Image 1 (cartoon, rainbow, N blue to C red):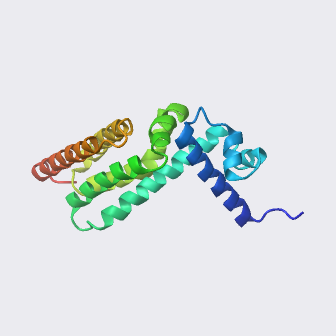
Image 2 (cartoon, rainbow, N blue to C red):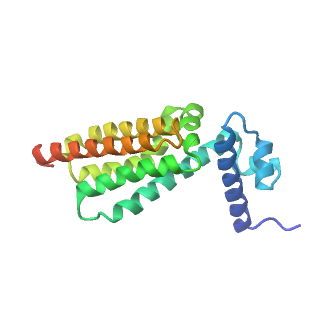
Length: 200
């Protein structure tokens, strides 16, 4: 029997990743078995291990893919505000909140991911995606010496806000409150940067 082509292998890996994302979202990481993921994907248990080594490796891939989806959503929304740095920052921040909380893997991204992978690895995955977009937006507004501090503070505030929302699924009042509070934070960044020292 001929070996699977690279395209077939990539398709299998993609199907396994999608199945893992759904299973983790529905049951949580610890309550999901590799056998359940394999059955959902329509592959053997061996195929799962071949492509992802183990269940933690699968979770890592699910979290990475989730961060990439959120970052793509942020970039897409922010493009509409190109040319206005503060509007770009505002649009990107709101897009992050919506993108991550409405993603099918929201609880995996925000709860299981940090708990299983560890905070440092989770942050590294976040840094490579949404945080990098946030840093670039802030760099257009703030002095160079303050960019990293503002990036970390605003990122931390948004992560806490979205984690709070995952505990209140369907609570539109809470969602609206987060967006209003986020507007206040972005307004404060705009006021601070407009009256602060010149960027260098």
